Image 1 (cartoon, one colour):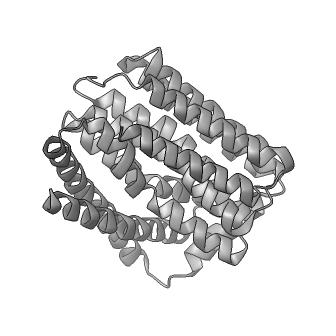
Image 2 (spheres, rainbow, N blue to C red):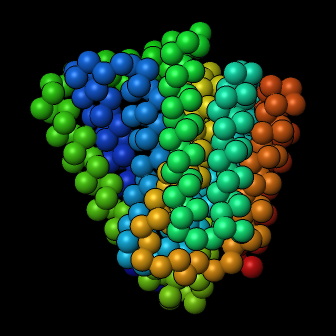
Amino acid sequence: MLLQLVLMVAALAIIAVSSDRFVMGAAKTAELLRISPLVVGVVVIGFGTGLPELLTALVASIHGHTSLGIASVLGSTVVNSTLVLGTLGVLSAPKISSKVLKREGVAQLAAVASFGAVIVFLHSRPFYGVLLLLLALFATSTLLGSRHARDSSEIEVEARKVEEGYNWGLGKSISITVFGGLAVLGSAELLVSAATKLAVQLGVSKAVIGVTLVALGTSLPELVTAIAAARRGHSDLVVGNIFGANLFNSTAVAGLAGLISPGLEIPRLDFEAGFMMAASVAAFFFLSSSRRLTQGEGWTLIAIYLLWIAFALR
């Protein structure tokens, strides 16, 4: 059991580092290929944020461990909405832009609700495919809306910071992107293998390991980013990224995992899906009530996360 835990920690560490390299390489490659910074900010960086969850869920589904993949997506969404946002509130009590709430906030609520509905009521492969259509709709709407929005410059500035921070040529940028992606894929394979063996050794379901250890591990980049942003005074941007991560997880990751799975032998996760939706609504309510996440609300979200862990391990 100890060996599997060590392998999981090692895999998660590799995922964190290599996914960061993937994002840096992809952003620099896009700059050198003269792709719009707006597209880089909305698509490339957003994709990189969800890369650990995406490849972990895909690897699990390909190997027939769909319950582990779907449960890790569900758990990651809970972690983002409670532990990550709660930590951000405790550290900085951030003010939130109304545009972020109306655009990313509402979109991620719709995505999480759709994902929850598929788990509880519409549990079949075609409906997981519908989640991918929702992602395409959200992405198109975001790109078209950002072209005319005043705050699109903020996205472009963040993309340029990433692009200009590395003096790489095209060949090196592409190599870093490819090797970063391959490293994430390989470590995702290791993570899934160790997680499934650990579940057997502990005598618990793969879904339990998915909603706890795997979900927390794949969400660590968002947690670290939130802490760093709180110290630098950029908490509002991180809230938008968290909303984007929830949207991506609930549509792209869950949709692909369910669509390519050789079988949908997922145990009933009705309560977990309901908890996920309730946590997302609670976080959105706290953020929108005064456009600020207070320290008290932050501690409340962290308490909700602890309740989630207590239930999952019961």
